[in-house]
Amino acid sequence: MTEKFRSLAFLIILLLFVQSVKSEFPLAPALYVFGDSLFDSGNNNLLPTFAKADFKPYGINFNGGATGRFTNGKTVADFIAEFLGLPFSPPYLSLRGSVKLTGLNYASGSCGILPETGNIIGKCLHLSEQVDLFQRTVEQELPKQYDDPEELSSYLSRSIFLISTGSNDYVNNYLQQNFYDKSKHYSPESFAKLLIDALSQQFQASPSSFLKV
Image 1 (cartoon, rainbow, N blue to C red):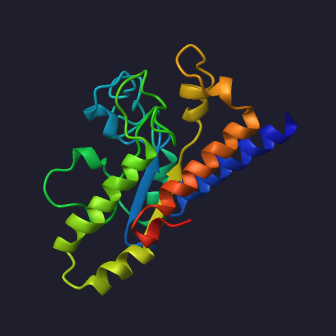
Image 2 (tube, rainbow, N blue to C red):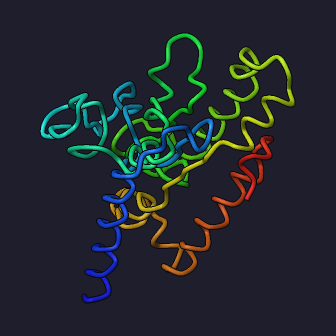
């Protein structure tokens, strides 16, 4: 219990520090965000799912109100964006027109590493879909704003990539024995290995070298 309290206290202090230290000039050109409800900034608003956060009390302490963030205020990704001196990465599905050069958010609440995770709640963008959307951004959208491939490569190599995923593979999959059979075929240890292997394969399969692990 003491160790958990220390970890929580450290996280709170870290977030307060990040909030107070804002860069005058961006420390990176862009922040690209992947993951689940911890980072989702509004993608699920545009998907047919029960996993939404576009209503109160979500967003009651956020300037934009209930934007689809699964929190009353900012997400950890938002705090990191502020620390880097960047605007908040907008949800990919909300984009109209050209992409934002300061980054994008592909995260989707209720989803995880495995493609079936969260599908009992509705549609969400599982991790491999998010990686595919990022790849589409790199191959089809960003070249419109970078004539020189070397400039684009330099931009991506200096960008920050943030990911939070895996918890829903337990909450919305492994532990939901009435809907999924993973717990019948995998022990907790073997399921954890399955997730790690799947995560590694998804990134290794990406044509983009910036998502290699």
